[in-house]
Image 1 (cartoon, rainbow, N blue to C red):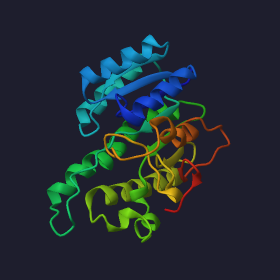
Image 2 (image 1 turned 45 degrees about the vertical axis):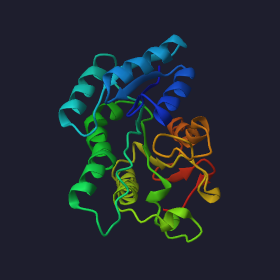
Image 3 (image 1 turned 135 degrees about the vertical axis):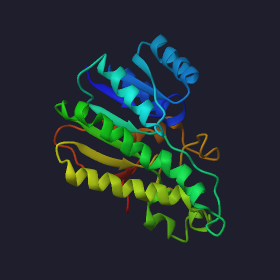
Image 4 (image 1 turned 180 degrees about the vertical axis):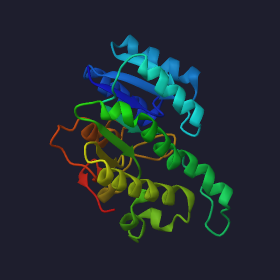
Length: 241
């Protein structure tokens, strides 16, 4: 049975990804910072036939991440796929007003979180035959996208979120280069060329469904052994870094 751990999976894109991979017969470790919401989400998926195990997981806590590793090891000796989905939008503070504290809070989840989780689960990933790591980033992490005057984000003067996702993109590439036995890929849940993104808590004005938004996550999570690594895609295919 293929095993996947998804962070931030109690709602939105993480939950939809868990649902879709559960339908494929995968064993889903549903990571959730809020235990109550995580259990409710896991129960709902299990009622529909998914093999799901709720894992309390706060990506900003070393102790919580270590606890998640211990819990997963109680069920399996390997993880085939890790999906670093948990993220935060931050407060949208203008660069002129942003403090180091504002930025640190966002980086703790969006940058340090994926590093904490990835490194903690590396031994379990390395025990798999075809290990894959999916970094859920954002179009705002693409410098090409943010500097396109035709995109609304070019006029959204925000510092923490977009720079954190740019950092996550670089982190993805560096992991891919350093650990070629594991496929590391970055995905953004939307259609960059069309400026269309899914409706979620982080983007309530989105026009795509969470199913459509999760398409690139599913694509990279289900890669065959000869699949690519070190790529950045959206729902329509490769996009510029």
